Length: 130
Image (spheres, helix red, strand yellow):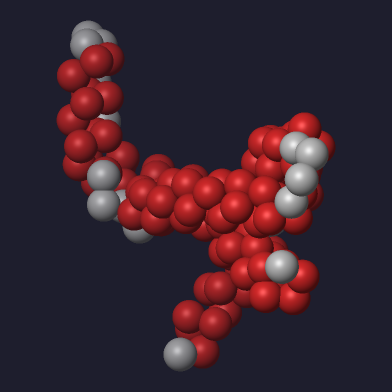
């Protein structure tokens, strides 16, 4: 249990503020613009569009989580090997896995995190104000 908690803390240390701000701007553009355009029930429209964006982000976050856990490694390796057609020495699957593990050490699942945050905000706004 402690090992998982340490791993979770390490993941949150990997949050890059610049990437998080860009993700926030991109994902909040539609709910904010839709709310600004509407004439009536602005809070209801904001919570609805935020819920839609949160659902899409949660789906993308689950798929990205599968990717981070290595569920698509063999497919990506075979696809990359087929597309590269190099004449030099080929990389073995174990070398490929070691390289990918190192890349995944510094990754953070922004879509899943933002999807959960947006869903929580939408639920709180819906219950408190609507």
